[in-house]
Image (tube, rainbow, N blue to C red; front, side, top):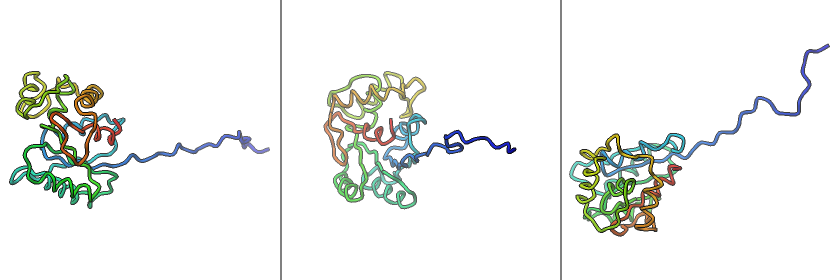
Length: 194
């Protein structure tokens, strides 16, 4: 007699198929604040994402950020590429939009600055403002110190920030300068799976 077991009809030993999440490239104009949002994305939701800073020697420049993204994208297998820039009075912003559109890169411009997205984690802010106004408000709320998030910053309140962003400017424009205030960071969150 054989000690073999009768087949139960169930397949054994098969593991569920794993699907690889898309891999993204995020290139930032800023060197501190912009990096902290994708870097702190929940591990369960975020795909593999590489974050890179554009070279700021000679000042910040959106076209330089897009060119850096093109260069880095050649060195990796990325499903999507995003550039984060502030609106500032950049002479090269329209050129950056054109090149990004041609190369399937999403340029996300926060107006007046990226810190607006951070402020929306805490409160509704829909008035026309300068970067200085937004940064001063964050400093007063004690969640930003020298452009770095403090430990009291509510990083997980993406839904609140997204809802406030939608109220201020429902269209999250890519490769376009939106109104003041606006930030298309929800586009990045969607790509990150958040």
